[in-house]
Image (cartoon, rainbow, N blue to C red; front, side, top):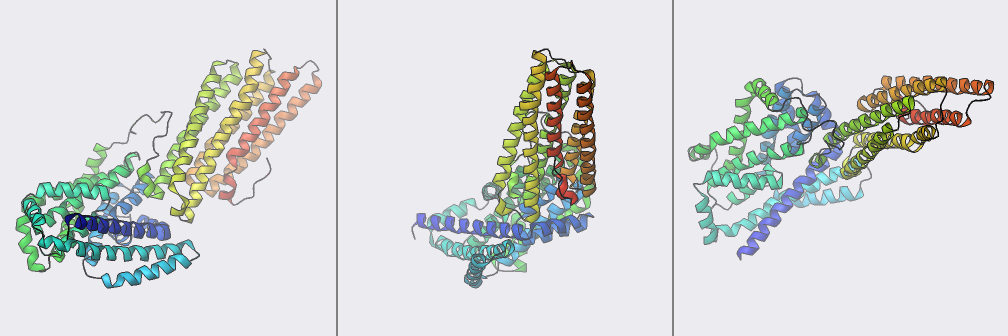
Length: 543
């Protein structure tokens, strides 16, 4: 067979294998992502439970990267200590080897059945979970078909003089092969796919086992990099477990590389099949990594904490989103956590606008107005960026809980942007008009306006807590503060009207500005407290 045709067939088989892996991974995450996250969170009590939790989740997801991103999402919220996170990663590494062990047997006869049942299930199912079960079956069928295609496509290698020359040239160059395999794994985002590719080549019977072993080592090293890349813009706690896992794999690969020729004969004593020797090597390598590093997780965690101290990369007050990492979109929990972090920073900028507005109202100095308008542009930039980020996350990839959370974040950012509009387009205009026209508000009106503004700002701060925690008690407290705000605001209006009736000389423009400011603050208060009602299980009252 022509070499170009062989290459095309191999590339096609690899592409189908990667797509099948992706189908299984996304199907499981969409159907059972919430349950897997809960299970993993439950396992984070000690290093051994964490290890087996990572192993179990990875066996189901068929992706250590997905398990790593789940762990990073918990770590980013402070739910996972560094020791437990590292143990999860070590368990995830072993979990991928179990999947490879299963797929090393010839189950290709099941591929047509899985494809047919998966297609029917996906096409006819009504519920999202049922559709994703069909997606999982389709992915498994594709993976088995791909392995069969790779075996058939690589068969001509045994009769090709050129391929034999290339393979013999690579034999004895384990470092080069490991680096190439690591790069391939990084591009494919799957160490399992690289190992299975090496397995399919070994089935030809003319693939040097030392080259296959070096490919396995490279796949293990390359497979630890995608989680690091996916969490580059996450906080330090989320980045620590993937970095620790990379260090563990790097050490075990460096130590193992010189002994490949010594290891090969001993593995052959266990099973004669080259394919089985490769997956056994893959499994034993990761078990050895876990056995070596599990007892030393605590000092390793301390090392990682020194490498990644608590301070935040970049300026936390920088007027641009910091945490909307596109790589994290593969893990909805991590992506949503990133969006919340920048939403809170957006809220901090809005709070600065409130403080400048207070100064402008109290002093009448117009230099605060420019700062407010500049910060409003930053708030709008955050709003656009967060909405674009969450839109890319895609509703199809979210389960019910994650979709609800996504909606909460989008609604909150819209609320903050609307509050900014009210401040700039209405309240600021009133203050500037009073200052330019030299219209002086009575001292009592200024005092009441500042008091009501302070209450609105306190409710804004409390709304951040409601967004972060989703706590019904905190939400009920915010609703009570809204009602208290309305009482104070009504009293301020009534007191002003009484003064207006008793003082016929009061400036009408100053009166209209004061009432306008109170009305705007009432609108702002209604906006920032609206999200508390569904969380508290109450029906929203009219503004």
